[in-house]
Image (tube, rainbow, N blue to C red):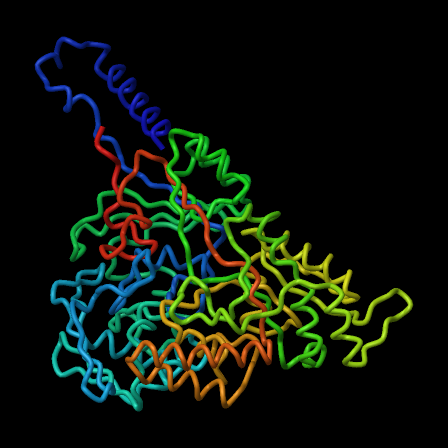
Length: 529
């Protein structure tokens, strides 16, 4: 960024000299600060693609998340360690029976148009989400009987059962608070103009969207936690990783989350760039569509899992940064992850034996199974990993075609229409193991596999209902053992990557443990010279 700032400053100074007839004597008494404009603080962040919407609650949209994180607030939010910290709620309490959760709102929060944020906005937001089954958090809100607002700054969630993980859920996807005075006009959220020109209560205001190019935000100077330090926050859309890395090196962008593993050593050697390792409970995984007859046989799913070389993917695609994942719940969350009953290890001959023992026969081309497809989105090494999987499955006599899509197209096909046999995804499975129920519980919106097991559901419910961590771990580990048996999905590698930024910036999201939100730029600033 500094190269661009210096160039702009030089041009402004040159024009100023021309405009005054190149006279310096008339300005000799002015201080130096009056002769040159202050350096504009513009942070440019790499974005992979266009957001699908600027409404933060209707769809899970990774492209949109860092943008809406800075426009809107939630009751609580996740910090960079993926733990819960306050947001609009300054504090909260849970009743003795675990069925009432009361949030106390800060009283100084305002919408970008100047109206106050009150408990009515919270109630309206969650009542609307619950009433619309296609909205991301709708099914999860089934646990809420009603939401009460005894005054403008108190909100009470009345639950039909105790669930200690619910507060963590409110800091995740699809839970941003929306302004009732703009949205409650009889229109569906998808059709409301406020979903295209968002008005939030967060640290930045929406300024401009250039499709395929950039999204620009400007500071909310009346933000309740203080005006952001930046003059502009720009998300530059660069789908290709190699192009994005070069843009970072050239100074055309200032921050790049999760740089390719192959570029880590090169970037470490650049004195203008800082790298910080960021780990997430978001393993790469293959999901089987259990509604599709092609993959309903658990023997086939087990053979596929056994024919995936996770070590090869880890080393060849991610240089060992993203390690092989065998546990059915992320190994990063050690207390809850079952390391004893795990997904299969790589063994081509064993994969063949599983198929033959199940009655599969080879065709003339040496395949036991043909006609399978694997849908993958662009970027993050996913297509390359899928191609390695395609090759080892072929060795085991399983023919599969990898289909690569731009992310939004993948999301429409896989996430919205559920039109796939196998698909590859990442996705957050924290901060609490109750995320297992969201990902694989019967009828849950994020259950892409359409997996259904009454025993699994019951174990997850028992795990959510107790505050005793040892008991919770026991329930969730048993639930993982069921996933090993049924294999609705296969974990591939852990998610870990280096966040890179120009070293002249401080207080980035990666630095905010316990202080500010994941992907939040409220306090980001240029370092003092």
